Length: 319
Image (cartoon, rainbow, N blue to C red; front, side):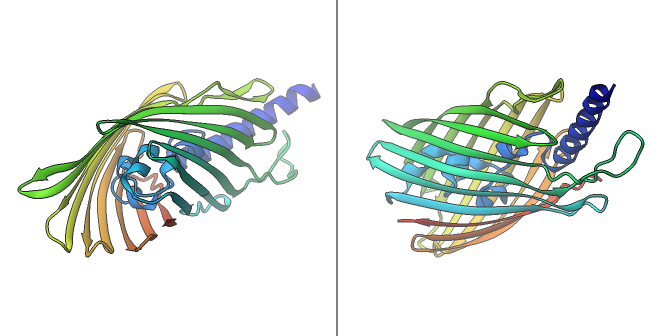
């Protein structure tokens, strides 16, 4: 009887917490799918247009800059839920290094948590509080094939704590095409197209019969940047993702955005991300870049009663 009650408590708690995290990002493991890059988050979450956080967005985009090292940190904070103590946040740090002209390697770490959930026994009496969290250790490799084509692969070790612990692994494979020598209305432009299959892996097993699926998804998108003049640059980007299984249902996300940059330093951005299951957002943001230093911020404004509003701030340096 005690084992049955314990099983029911653990299952109920897991469902509660996964519901909270689903409100945050649409599935039970947002640490794997949430965009940690503030720049592309402001452009409808079209991460193909990345200029930083390459490991978690587009590792092949690192080849577009003439630096050997890249490093980024970011923090994303969700709007506080009045019924739950604490605030859900995702924090990330990455570093990348070009071994040679055609090779690049990456490493990173992500942590998600901040909520405090009240515990109760089957009679409704309060027990200990629960502080669930997830973290990942991530590695990546990108190879420049030639003629504008690159391929990449990343892998993640995931640790997840509810009332019990679970750990697992997921990997991503993708390919990118880049063309930096095109013209749009007689203006020099750069084109990037990216496609990947992400977060492939077995279910996480928390024990007592509770398992959750990896958010495996297929994503494709493109980005175009046009130098209108020496001091004025316009960029647009779009992407779409199909999630194979989200609580036994498929899910589609699609986003697009635009960016205006003055003097290769100051940028303003806006976009829109569509997601079924009440996951759509308007996105806005701004950034400043000085030499190798990048500072970006974005805000995601939910368009439904579910809200799902959150702020992302990122700092990066290329050298």
